[in-house]
Image (cartoon, rainbow, N blue to C red; front, side, top):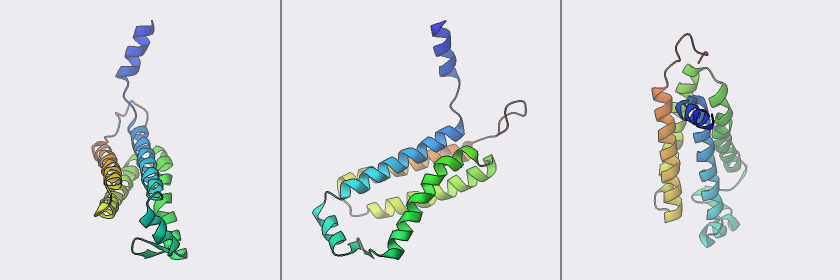
Amino acid sequence: MKDSIHTAQERSPIDVRLRMSALWVATMLVFLCVDLFSLYRADVRQGLDDGRVSVFDVGQPFLLGITVYVIVPSVMVYLSLVLPRRINRVVSILLASVYAITIAGSAVGEWAYFVLGSLVEVSLLVVLIHHSWTWRPRAASSASA
């Protein structure tokens, strides 16, 4: 009995929505860790003390922009589970593409930990794009997609 339950669980695929949501979560966790690790760098701390992050002045517009930048993929964790399939696919492909580009761009000239984290983030987003792109509707007899 135990073996038949285990085998049935191995055969049942993980829903695309759950995979996509998990990929957004994983991307955000790596994103968070890489940014937190940056606070251990003297040059980053000095920039913050001077009111700058990279080439940006730290002020309300910068902090609002960063907040929106983080909110979007955070909300996608939920929206990946509830949006209709067609809308979900388009939104996920577009957003994951934009984030992959901005993440890759921010890694140029960075330290190795940042580049590695960025490579992982971009890889997760590429997998998310793949799942979105290849996501097909279920058969009419199955639950609606």
